[in-house]
Image (cartoon, rainbow, N blue to C red; front, top):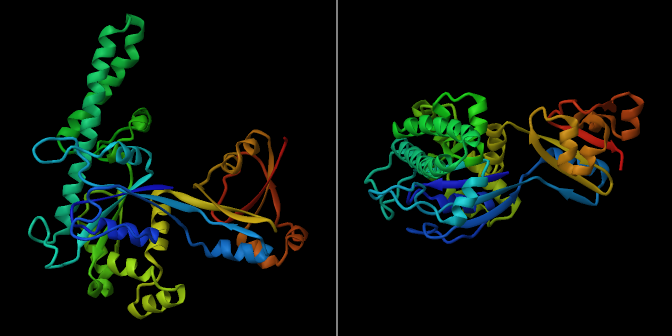
Length: 367
């Protein structure tokens, strides 16, 4: 899973990046604004821990999330809107599955807000506008290239280009009215046509309210307030204190858990954000297990058994015979794989079986 972290200046974006990756990128008044930061974190998974204990396995492989802290403005526009991301940042934006938008909700007189006041709803709207302008720049440049290609093409080769131009012009009109792609009511087939452009306003967004430590008891209230002001269901909201979460990463797991319990925080930010991103992207997890290795595999919900096998290795999908399937909870309740077979809970499923969250799979295939 690839996530791009975006945010306006002085939102605490790089602090949130460090909190989510256990990283140590430099932070401060202008920390993180001039350079890109890359980080990866393993997703905590209690179910995988239980599966590895069940098999007494030698190796445990957690699913991971790759984060890119995107510096600077996103939009390729004039009028002080910035020159857009550099090539490395643009590549990260192109390949990201979702955006993590860090929004300033903390007060700090030593770091004054560029707009003079803290207003999360205003800043969310400002970033949404940046995303719209970034997409508009991409669409405008594609239209310019298409115009040249279509005019020079043979009559029989023009039709596809002309159809694409019609769609892009319609999309451009919406973007010029500051309407993101996800709000333009495009049918699924047109969204598929646009998929290769990696337009940012088609991507789901996790809004991270970066709050003060003293506001932690009000986190849920602040989340609800923010949700009520969003004009779209395209986003999920979570509140966390980036500075505190970053500092807790330097403690032992036991000490950090004790601090979180005292403050009523619950899970670490990286675990909460991972769960919400799974929800945002419609993902679930299946598992493979043996005495050699236990592993978590994120997939889209209800992915077929054959395609799930392909996540493990392409050869397994090509030579798929069947999948032996049991839900993790059933396997653990049986106490052993032999007992699961005796009870008839370990079943064979074909290629089209929709893999469920928590399923443990063993793939049988032809070499």
